[in-house]
Length: 564
Image (cartoon, rainbow, N blue to C red; front, side, top):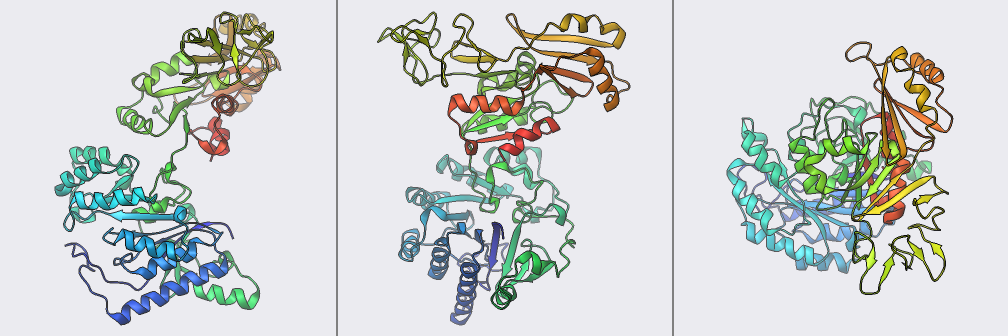
């Protein structure tokens, strides 16, 4: 059985808060009801450990669970399972943090696996007092998120909380179900400034089991569903455990095959826990366990431009997207990964150009890294370290001759990565077929193609109905675009016609052609978005797990899947 997101809701229905909208407000649990809930929770934890179920658990109680020590004890026990990556619970954060963390530690809880979800209730607690609890959790090294219901009348209190919280803490906003009207544009803008993902809350996710993630919601009696609002049950967690013992092992998939889980009676996935695990939910920085609502940012993010950052047919990035990139740039380095040549890409993302660290252009035939070698070169324009009279490479030692990059003591020219440049005057790395330059702190690399065929192709423009666009860096041609006349608005050239044209144009085997719409994009064979990203990863020291990539076309699939 693979790892999955697990949820548990026991029989607890008591809470120490009296929020006006909550049916469990100030409901005191009897000693008997508390004991019943404790037994149910421990039974569930024991079975999770015995079955070696892997993944993550989030406790989602009706009342307030974390004021009860037994929940901390159970979470601690489960956190010790090697199969579990994370454990946590939803809470109003009213518990004694010092006391309850002591319980968790006493029972051997793994602190690195603990994830807490705290809901701020302005009716019950001040922003200052809530933030004080959060700061203590931060000091203890606890991973957590906080948030509130998007009540327009409570906007100022939520804003105040945001200002008091550490910048690293994500504050989410849930839409208010009982608002009985639409949010105004001003309210949406205000809540989005606090929570960049608030617009996801306003989307209507039509219920569809086909895109449900691999999550299981378990109730106190063992009844299982796919999420917290699903009425379709897919078996019983404890019946499964019994069959495991009697039949050796019967996994959840076999059990669920006896139930019809392909149908959902819900019209919409109407809350975060219902939609967060959907395959089509756009919440990339919360995976692999989005239920905890704790974003995990990579070191570097690569974005396609057309269709991803810039809507199809538009000429420049929308303000809303630009604002989102500005927020993201505080967390990680932002790069581009596009088939557009450098100059056109720069125009389309001009409002956020200062946020972009570099990128892959022309489908990998050109790539750049800005501020290359920061912290190592005293004079970025010529690479000279004035205090020593030498030029240092980013990693490998120092170069005595700035103009040529030559290390006089060894008689070699060193590249950033691993060896020496074969052509010092041009910066050409023969082993990779690349031409490198490093000016004003920007590493700029092109992969030039053999363009002897270009003159013949230009002579066919009128006969075959296309225009030629050549992109070069100095004398090196790295991309050629053949733009064919469209057959009709919105239509693309048929595949068989594309093959015929490629043969007639006699594009050499040393080059490759990528079709986008009615444009043939020609670059050197072996180039591509993923290949370019991997070059940047090498020079910047990014590991595969440090990177994410986003795009919307078939040409993006390779890079997206590689870093998913």
